[in-house]
Image (cartoon, rainbow, N blue to C red):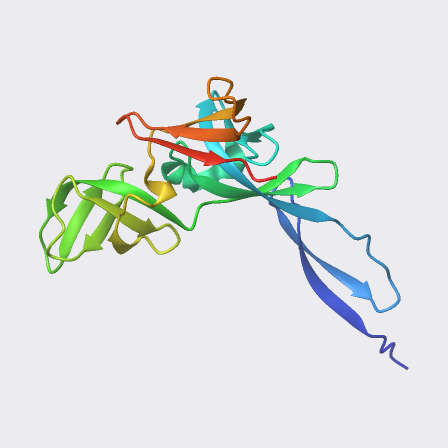
Length: 194
């Protein structure tokens, strides 16, 4: 007589180390649930082997170890939005890079298509009308040209610093705003959502 109990073969990943292993579980075995939350964050700066992000809702700073960023460092421009997955204790488990970033074309190469070398050290194929100095939007997953950058792209604000909520006393309006200031002198003020 053979034992024909049902089982499931699972591939498990350690959320802290990234290592994987396979486990067999019988149908009557239970597994502890892990609660994971996803937070939108804004990249601020790099400090040693840590990357500092800010939650734009609470203005809390979140330190992320460089090991979690892996090969996505090139997409971390100041002021770019990304996502972090946190466990129930608030520890960062994974980093999800932005879906697209705005870059500047530094130079163009030939070949069958026009290849652009970008300011973040990445090469992408671009249409014939793109010239050095143009700002373009790039898909970070496929490293693909998406289009020209517009002034309305928040991702186009490179060299950005986010300042905490301030109350305007000069005008007496009591409106709380956050500001983005670029190295190029561009400034955007928006009301803080309640």
